[in-house]
Amino acid sequence: MKMQYGKTGPATTSRLGTFPRSINDSGAVTGRYTDAHRVNHGFLRSPQGDIIEFDAPGAGTDGGSGFGTFPESINSEGAVTGHYTDENTVKHGFLRTPRGDIITFDAPGADTAQEASARRGADEARPVPHRTY
Image 1: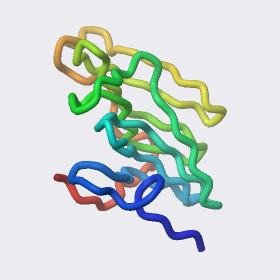
Image 2: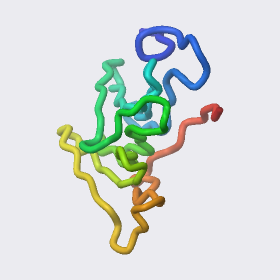
Image 3: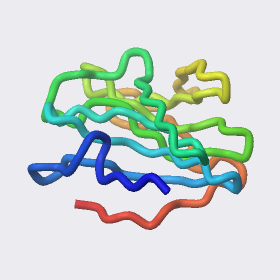
């Protein structure tokens, strides 16, 4: 069993680290990690322990501002849904396919000035208990 805290080691300040959000029946986990610049990135951990990092196209990269990619759920086929915040602090939805393609979207009528258009919950995805700071 491979044990690891954080993406590459222990976090050294608050609000950095790894934040799992959902696990599917196969044991694949999705969530986000916050890097040293306080930018959020998505990850997918396979049942074998391999970690794939990803960012939604258009996700903001300005550190310390809450920008980045925020995966919320994973289904039995490995599709991940979530939202990302762009450079203008507008939230948008995304779907990461099992092949790794990322499709971004805004729900019709969504107030893209402040509201996330991502749908929480992909099929039978279960939330992972986590600590919120």
